[in-house]
Length: 204
Picture (cartoon, rainbow, N blue to C red):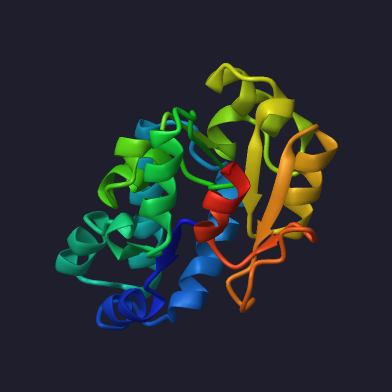
């Protein structure tokens, strides 16, 4: 919802090093996490990636150079910020609101992703599911985020691009809207937004 991942550039990077498509690598990565357990700290994440790349290199007999390059791969470098995001965060900050990111991110480096893209300066809290031990749409995920922000669930405005997560937020007492970038106009009454540019309307 905040960030777009440049799949074309990432696919190009791996095509020069690994005899698998980006999608095949992603599928193997998911299976690796389900088998080994997704990392809950930055140190666990470092080991997680090293072991994953080593396993892949061993399987395909990749060179030491490629192994080293894969160990240095930084997925956060492939994120770009949607143009509506920074103005929305600046508006929320100008109104004195606390801003939190609650993500079903399967890695511990959510905060680092936000720092790499420059968004962290406006964000008070980042909660990744693997770190807090709960994921959307579980009530616990919303409750943990609200508690750490120091606000009641009923005081929260929640935006997400997954209907099931919006439903979970509403069930937890939050005011929630879905962000659907395929729409052409905001549908405020239906709680559907094209993007975060609608924040001014919601906060007026």
